[in-house]
Image (tube, rainbow over all chains, first blue to last red; front, side, top):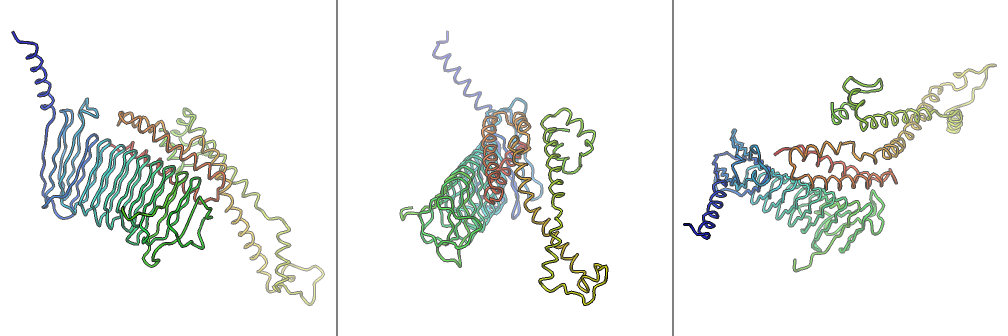
Length: 287
Length: 204
């Protein structure tokens, strides 16, 4: 006669085995040429993209159940990966987690509704979109970075010489060391936090309707700064050379406009909110 | 024809005569679109009435004549006929009078029309607040329910936020239609709502 303890152990073993059987891994390899295009569409689950050491695209996918399958194809220099939900799939059973290696000059498009989207050390265009996705992009240079989220937080770190556009409805956006000819962030209620030096003689446009905007910059920044809030407050910790002529009335507490650093190499910085606070902070030596 | 299709068709086809068969059928059954079309028709009617009110008064013509005389563009003739004619009165420069009058009339109409959008904006703004963007929020939530039911609460929350931002900005534009920052905030708010719709329609 089988003891109760033994029966429990067998039952637990069956359950674990069942789960492991349901979860499966798949791997795909593609050879591509320069400036390949790679697209991953994944309703549920995370996508992480890193550079490969050769001209291969390697896709590792972990499927959490048999209610989802991975459709994959290559057309010329373009690779398309799509998670295909089968009947009865939901956010849990339809989940796939991807780890993708691509040549560093590849253009990458990632889409996930709920998972995290991560890209790093790339030189090709990066486009990340997902209503609830958490977005993390770092160490990207000489490329366009486009991010579109609804409420997922967005973190950009060390994006150099980039054309950066971020649209977020309610997620917070944090940019650290992000410089380029254009850096634009638009949010409805998310906070925008910029830590950097507005370098590259670029154009920086940070706009939020009700979220606060905080920019922390060193004293030696060269920038032409305009900040305006229709109904919120603005604060400026850094002395600016006031502009003599602006297209809007510079009401104290609601707007400021001025120049800092060397005009010849200055960037254009426009900070706008409707009701959020704007704060231009001086970076301390420790930061 | 659904609400989105009807609103798109308004830009292409005028429905002064009631519209196409599809449009009529939709308007019969959709009080929301019917109210929108009524409001648009009222705005168009109001615009034409404002233009009609721009005809300058006879005093304008007198002012033109006085100004031209002062500038020496009009010189008195040595002999005046018993019944002076227009050409005799104005001499070689007679063509300047109607040209100047036409120019002043155009300037007046232009200035008036520059203020027309502000009046229309106020009227339209009063209409818009009831339906912040003209985009049907119910269509959005139905799309989300079909494509991403697990995310309905997030979409509903963000829809509320973006509608509030549109109402905020609209209110600021109503207070001061000439405030460029308020108008920009309104445009940004509409673009954010458009992005929300795109996300809901986009199926990964």
